[in-house]
Amino acid sequence: MSICPKGRTSKSKKNKRKAQSWKIVTPTLVRCTECGELMQPHRACRKCGSYNKRTVVEVED
Ligand SMILES: [Zn+2]
Image (cartoon, rainbow, N blue to C red):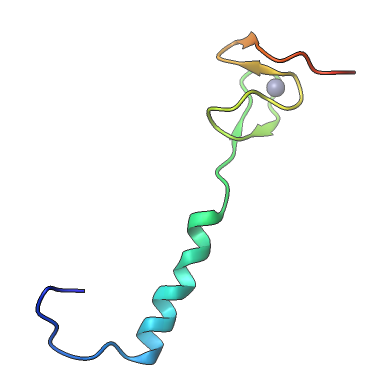
């Protein structure tokens, strides 16, 4: 919205803007470089426990 609004924001325009908010909470996933599993970026892999090409977390099994 501009600093000097020319008109009132319509209901549909306001609703459409609110409908965009789900995009923010959608988690971003990247593939693990070690095992190829989907994982959150900047987190250790849940499957093999590797991060930055080395194992940082011991994973059972
Ligand atoms: Zn992995």
